[in-house]
Image (cartoon, rainbow, N blue to C red; front, side, top):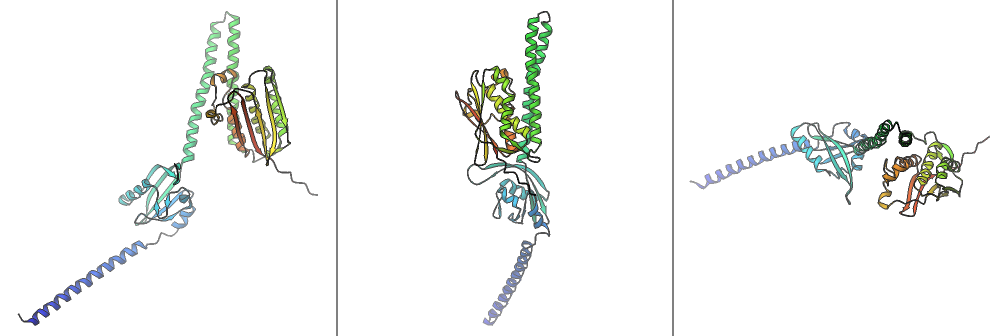
Length: 381
């Protein structure tokens, strides 16, 4: 074959290869433009504004499961890290929803924080498609809701248990009185025990009502100026009979006069409970001290007793509802386990706190700390 034919064939082959290459490049460019168009598809109008005003955590993710929008709450909950989701459970749900096209709701425990054990948060997460490409993640923090539900369940269980004991005792004593109808001495003894249990039931009912009222109301909404020295006098006066029965003295020591803003009734109730506890749990022929001083704008009302004291591992729990360090002694004294819980709620509702110092064998000091009321405004003519 002549060499010119080889040259012609080579040219034709090169032309065919070049044309095919140009066609492939064109197809690739067209696909690339399509991919770029999909990748640059804008977020639907209003979605960005909606995400930023959500009370719950809101996150918008693109086709490659990257975060492109996140609300301030999502950042606060530590759900995102740059353009990545921190929760593998949520990321797995996003991929499932992308594959099925159907929204999904899941409950999970998310650990916020990167250092140490972090804080466990209970989240309810909803993942749903947003258009053809985007995914929307909404997360609501249910930690407080579940905590309150647990507190409510514990409260119902505790109150059921606490009421069962005196009610059962009254029923048994009533049967005993009926059986001992011919023995006046035994009837009087059983009647006395029944009276004690009835008093305990009445006291528990009153304290439950007080506690519910304290938790439901805001004493600072209609605050009045309350004199601490007057409150101390009233609290001591209401406990004088119980102290005299045990040959005890209640010694006040008011170093500074002060006023606080709040409810006089509730603050009096708190101080009275502290003094009553000190009298109940102190041995006979001792004394209880009630001191008042002002330091750095805080009035401190300290109630000191000479009782058995409280072990360190018990001190955090004494403010829990129905918790009693010595249940057997509480049954004898008629304690309900609600007095210190009331004090804690009164302190918190008035912007203060209750602290405890105690040492077994040496006694305890409970200190109610409340912010001092500012000077009253002067009237102008």
